[in-house]
Image (cartoon, rainbow, N blue to C red; front, side):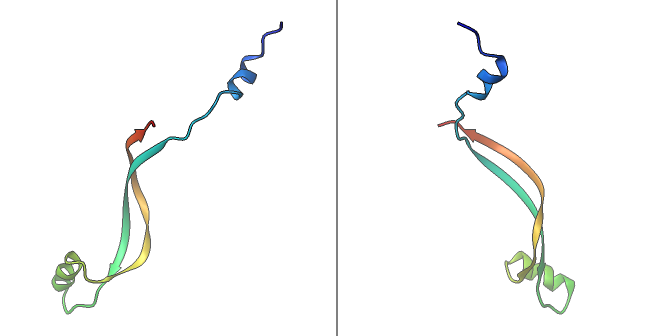
Length: 68
């Protein structure tokens, strides 16, 4: 019996599906109407306003990989 080449055996390995908890930090631009920048800051901190752009990922960190 002839042995299979290493590359052929590796391709037959059974794969599994893994899930991960990932922390993604995203930079977004939000808009709010206000009389001053200080007021705008308070309003935005309170959750008032709306997102003007969807944002982009600036950091991705894997918290854990779930091996079920």
